[in-house]
Length: 507
Image (cartoon, rainbow, N blue to C red; front, side, top):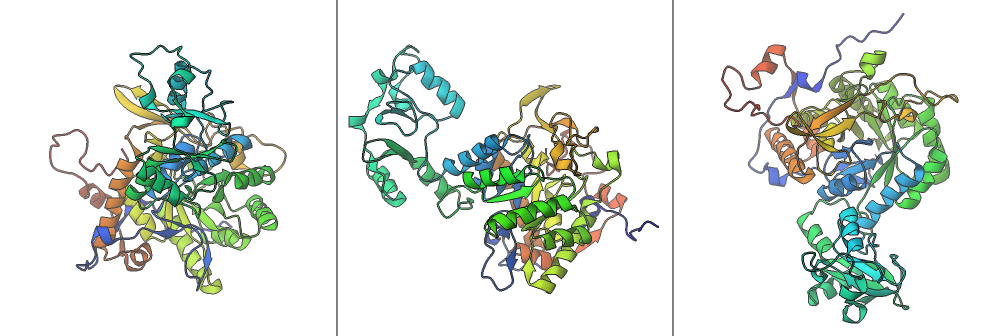
């Protein structure tokens, strides 16, 4: 007969943290949110790949493109570029993230001398850059002839048909540096000469790259940036269990720091086969996450298959209808607690620590605190990030309010059926497991993430913890009744503002 779990399946909203002693040294500014992203062995000095904040963006078309990846890496998190696109397009997104802040940036907005001011305006609108090299062939590595910046033209006084050659700053007036210049020397040249950018050229005066003053300034004002050994932004990428043999090599070549199997259910041979292929061809040099699972058996299966991290959660996403459609899933709090216990047991047995990612079921900012306290090392968020300027979806007006479009990967709009792979030759499902929707527009990523992280740090201090492992060790959790949930919000008053003051909802 069927197996029945003794306890009900519970969500984050059914739990509260009970405060612990807060010593005087425990203040938000002293809290470290660094957390492991991939597995490591007990006794190693540190995890080979860690996050500076415990947040990653979901592998979703409406959430994670290269623009989101740059914005989140700037704050210390990591994006997983969506895999529901061609291999070439996904690899190109990864490459753009790696090139965005390499210190030495390959220009993606380039001019030839016979182009016009109209072309300059169009390129600026397309790429957002005001600095554009002028080369003999209009490519990123042609012979450098000059440069165009916002100081070289004024739209109110010039015609759009004016040639670039007539208003660019010519090569002979530019300060440049040779190809063997180090980043430190390049930044010194920029500062000594009060430049905004420095072209790097080879022996034939062909453009190699650009170094920007703003990148130096950006790093100083964003100390949590997720940077690799070459000072490039770090980025992840989604893969599936069908075309991995072609997709993984392309993503690795493009510079992806980690990949993750994007699937609605990870307790399957298809994920094991995918992981085994990666290990056979790349050993441990390519880091791969897997999931999703909701119990100890699923975790153990993926751990033994060789996953570098494991994602938890089925049916808890705001746009997911898997539980309604198929009757499959588990409350996110219960799933996180059980899988974390299995992870800890595996760690005691093997000495290998496998990080956990709680994916789905997070409605309020404080649910992130609960997920971490229950044993997750980081959380994956879709709706949260979909609300921001940096997400790739459209901003629209709905009933007088700005919204952002947001749809599930199992919806008819995404048609991402490979993430529901059940083997065989058939690649299409005949029913949906996700919806097409809107989420309230919330502005910039940075402003919102700053507030969310401040709440998390404050909660950790209330529990007397300065690190996530200490938080997990000291956390005390209690179940709450339906009545106490009501008591936890504004009640028995007439609110002056129709919007509840508890704006920790992910607006």
